[in-house]
Length: 607
Ligand code: M6R
Image (cartoon, rainbow, N blue to C red; front, side, top):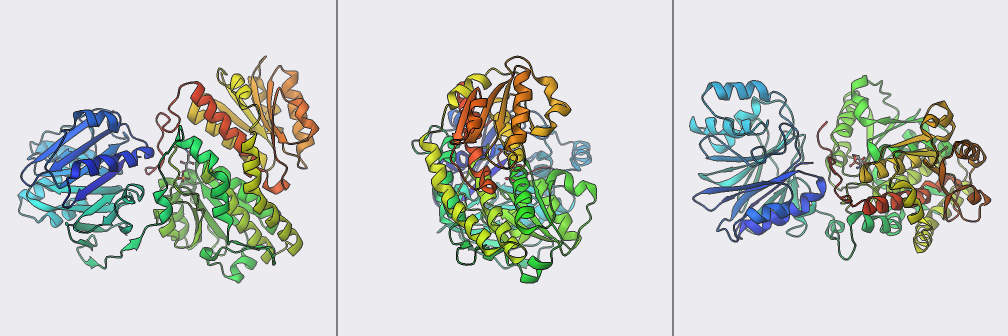
């Protein structure tokens, strides 16, 4: 969602800000703007649309060594130039960019209007700029004006503020991430690590409630109350640097094909072949917790929730203890009962998903222990949990999640093994699984050498009114993931059901020629899935079948796509690949914006 980038230093800020915005594009946005400070004046340039549109309205050069920039994903007010950030105070002395939502902005807005201030936009963010302006006018310092303003607002924020009469940037965070990059005689502010890597590896993560004064040579962090806090400079992970598109046509294409290497990265050094178990050091799981935990709860949204559902089944299979997945956006609102001895896993690619963060806070408030299963190192969820496992997918920039899904499944497989071996699972079973898991990246590569008749599947999907996805057991969440991918990329309504549920309702949708995607690896449920295939075919449906190579079930599909044979518990790592490719190629065929589907954002940082 919205992205912030700021710069103060010795270089011309304009190209740095534009490049920062470009690197934030993947988060999803609908308008963008920059504010430049040349030591005497502040100039603002904004536009609806993409960073490329902004470039057209920017000056060729600007003599400004300080500036703030923003990509906006509309929440309050439509996609208009007026609503685009940065927002200025009534007197032009304050310029502000904001991520998050100000809940009490209506009364604050009314109060400003009663003071004769004319608001220029419909946003909640603009009120913040005016409130700071009023504080400054009353003689407060920049720090106190921001602090006093923050005392009166409710909601979430990551803000970066620039002042006409002061040579500094002020940043504050509550619920929306902000990271400050430390250079030599220059500083950078960003809402995620990705745009910082080309400038510096040294970063300071702001925590909720922090406020930072950023000058060319210093970063001073203080609490809401003004108490100074030790500045903790950390080093960014190298892998964030490998995030350029290169020769690939789209990030999604690149990321689909990165899955074998990403999975290798995820499992390497985390399995013990001799003992047949997983070793997740970062989980810091006490043996007693592993042995005594009464159950496991997994939380996530979208793709992460589907990976969690697979993790749930693997935990039950390997450790024989109950596991349940919860949609994180529902969790907090249902006043959940927390067992302090249970293990809670929060699954997230970005580590910034607001719904998942709320769920974690609810569990922690009630005394539960939450472990992160996260991709982005140093992200809010990773730090909030303080323990867990990084899935090490590397940067995922396409809004549609692909390599994070397989690595979430990979990491949860290793976790299940560790839990299983501490309880019921035999060493032999563990060894066999490890051997197969280590084979999985090779098998992914083998599949990519011959992906099968994906284009024939696209022929059936591209003009469909709706598509039904079916699977059973571990393949049911894979079917959901395939349906989500096609729906978000090609805007085709898709339904995913456990195959047995089909006759309890969804079957009513079937007409002559309706495409039904069936995920049917050679596991113990295959014969039952076959029944559903026959029922669909009897009603004229066209079957796109994902099956294991050499299996006679291939004959049942109108389009049959073979994946290599693997241990039945590891099939999701392979069956999802053709579903990703089908969604990708359908979207390309339909001329959709594959990496940035309409209305969606990569990091969903508001509830
Ligand atoms: O960053 P997260 O994994 O927490 O994100 C969760 C969902 O927003 C995300 O998986 C979303 O569903 C993707 N667009 C799916 O491709």
